[in-house]
Image 1 (spheres, rainbow, N blue to C red):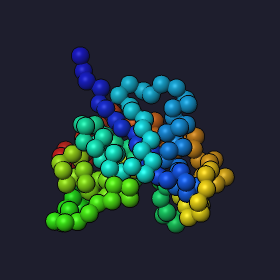
Image 2: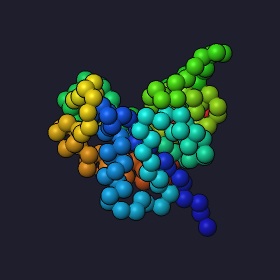
Image 3: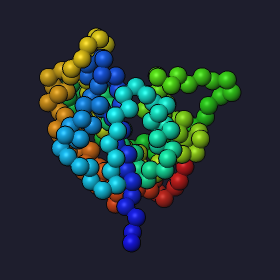
Image 4: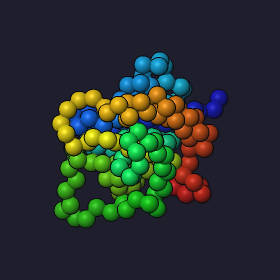
Length: 173
């Protein structure tokens, strides 16, 4: 019997800041579609980066982070990035404080690398936001229109990560 690689799909962001809630909304769409594929776990972490870091350290084979990210394109544009351990500075200086409610994806990965819990391959699926500064609920029209496509990309990425969950080049963090 072969073990199914475990992939965590983590929606992150602040739903109180319109498009920053993109990651949480993608997880909602995935859950509404029905049961997750075997070995794929959907979780909405919102702004709780420290909880996400601890969950990652439970031993997943791969991680998909879903978030809003300003890259300079039109709102609703989707991006897929794959950071490696070499891309993330895993150092935390003595006395340095990590805000458990202000941990963006990079800081989550930094903390996880620091404690030796890098989860194999990591993929970030992000959407260019329109509004992440005004307080209020609901995604902008263009970002909301990208939800279904983003959910499809997440499922495709999860399937690919289950086929090859280790860090590219065979390195482990």
